[in-house]
Image (cartoon, rainbow over all chains, first blue to last red; front, side, top):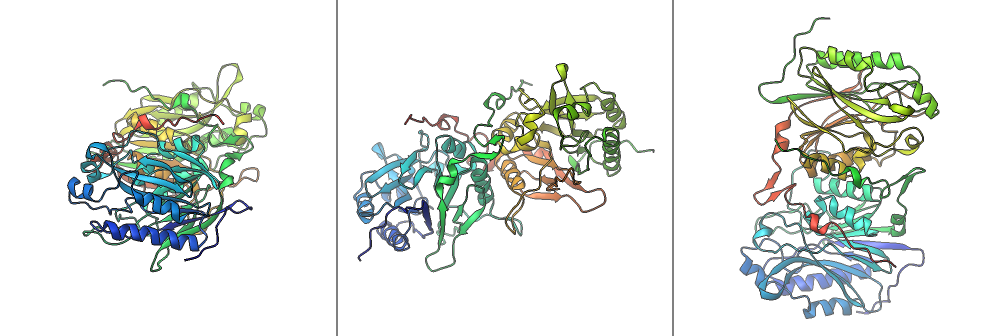
Length: 287
Length: 287
């Protein structure tokens, strides 16, 4: 395959592409190939930032910790080099979730941010959902914010985003875009409403004046269905793109990430400067 | 008027009524009468918790601080006694916004929680919106949580709710219901979306497992229109009631506030216990 090198737009527009692929538990080799194929597709679509699902390498519905361990990659696995090589000649950034094998067999639900320069960051999910707690160890480091040619990208994973402290911390650290690999188990919502997780993300985007790109997964896995709710949300909290129904579903939006630098929302108000940390701690008297 | 005493339901159901009245700047006496009439209507509807708008006593669009001062009430104004008397023989709670005159002529954008026992709390808005900053002094105390026979009620005012730290602080302090007097200037939103402020409130309710009752105002005031978006939201973030189009618009919902005591959302997850304050502070390196 030949491809023209894809460089950052001189106009400052960044094309965000969430590739909502379908990992399969136990099919590590096929999952890695699926990631490579998805990155290829997004590069062909001239993506500047590519987001892939949580645990894209391994699938999600593990029978046991032992099974997960057989599907895990160390942070120096050659697969990362393969992704780096794929980005050669481009300014494109890829964020994807993977099952990370750490020393002493400890597993983390992690995400990597990769560019043509290498692996810029690995983040270990700090808020584990349900049975993830039986498989993974909770990360103990704050989420990273990585300066890229497209803007500053913060990382969170799925349930992390339901703690408003996380997008807030990322925005305070300067994130223009939150890239959020996700596996959203299918949930109910009343007719006419969006998925609850998207409502939470819209609020996070608007109250922090930051863009959010969430890549969900597809594909029934051991009976588990998913929202298939990949979405790109602008800095006002409005949905700019949702996953298509195509054979390879994706959500694509062209955005001006630099707009996230302006936190003024009235002549007298600023989303971050208006915070009042002095009043956020309420004394609770013992009863 | 005679009224049967209204006591808390033995079943634990609480009827929340947001009376979306239309204050008028400069018409203090008429505004106070409008509040009394709204409380009467809600009591007739057997309300357990009545929420009224921000600055219900005074209106919102002041020409100057001096004008606002002529419309302000001190915290011991006889009007509060009138509301207390109105609640005699009931367990009903009323939360309403008022323009508060404090010593040395300082003004606060405040809200009072009143029961038949008296004024239980006065809260002074800590996040001021736009030109409010030219009229009011910012409150410097955390928002209160008041234990009532219906449950624990926290107070926030309008723009306060757009800081996720506020509902979080109130939930951590035990609030089952957030009562939020509001004046939402009319805002744009894409077709098919709710008002942004409601999306933010839905997220706040769901991520804290708490009910939220927001009372907006109606009535064009000096050219300013409003969302007229009064809403009662359940602990899952779903809208249970919105303001009616009636002559006296209101949003009414019967809710089990005790459901807010259960923060478990999976066999392994708890909305508040899952927080990771250790990772919410990101070191930002100087550039």
